[in-house]
Length: 221
Image 1 (tube, one colour):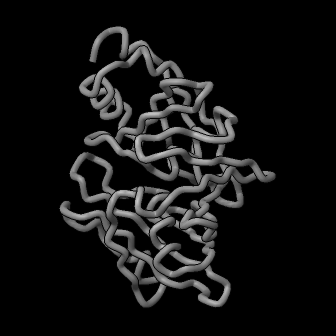
Image 2: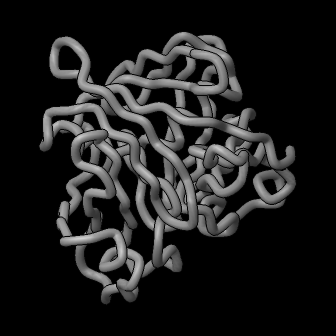
Image 3: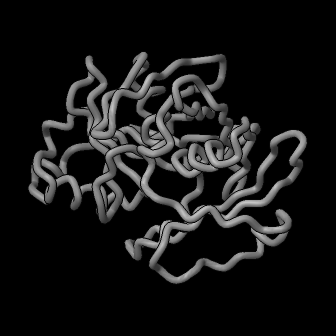
């Protein structure tokens, strides 16, 4: 990483906070994306932060963003889009996968996307929330979204996410992309509790879109 890039301070937010305002997935947002140019620079910066994802804002008026994990670039990801939409207060974002509509509704920030934009996930259903909570981190190799019904009639789900990339992020605290895929798979709105207590809300929308929403809190910048 160049000296210029290392001097760039990100805004840090927690995305998909629980009802008590705690938890949520940490996200770094680099508003001056032009200060960290090139794929190698951005990969090194994201790896240095160590969050599951980091967003580089390449045009803050159009909402053009670039999303990186500590090991790969992503065309789309859920919690980075929700966090960036909240922080930038924009009606849409432009990702490598496509245009992502965004809206604010009280304490929740929502985005809409096509589930197929999300990277592949293995949706692995378990018999009870206790089984999900007892899981050990699996070995690297596949992205596993472990889930179980807490209350099927009410659409309440208990989930955990294991990226399996071997890049230091063993468990993802809150994963909007996986929740989108699960919502499309089940064909219904969901209220997901993931990780230590993060909350994600989803709803199928028109034209194959799925909405995912949650609370966002500023950590620092």
